[in-house]
Image 1 (tube, rainbow, N blue to C red):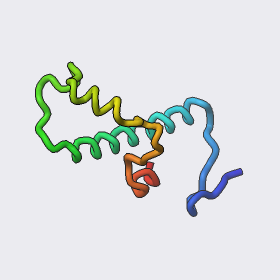
Image 2: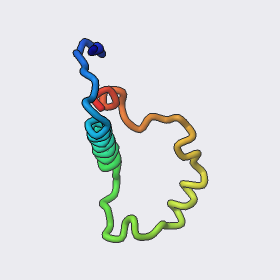
Image 3: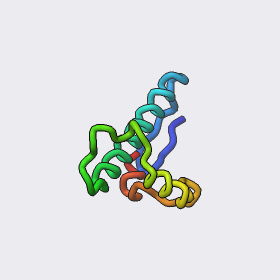
Image 4: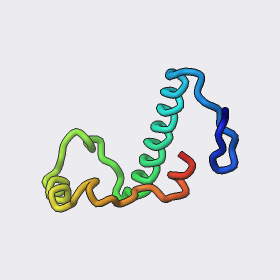
Length: 83
């Protein structure tokens, strides 16, 4: 039996492997979308050592933030719907 979601006919997965491949594809699209948003928000050019060290300013900014606890969306709803 198939289900309908958003007007699309959906079929059940043939096996667990097919399901996992689909989920990995979805995660890949999410990561790519987050990366695009991150790169678009960079105001300064990336230096060659970015990611190899954590500056004092980055530490202080992290300590002042609530991290992912805020429930803040980092991607627009339109992108999340596509994923």
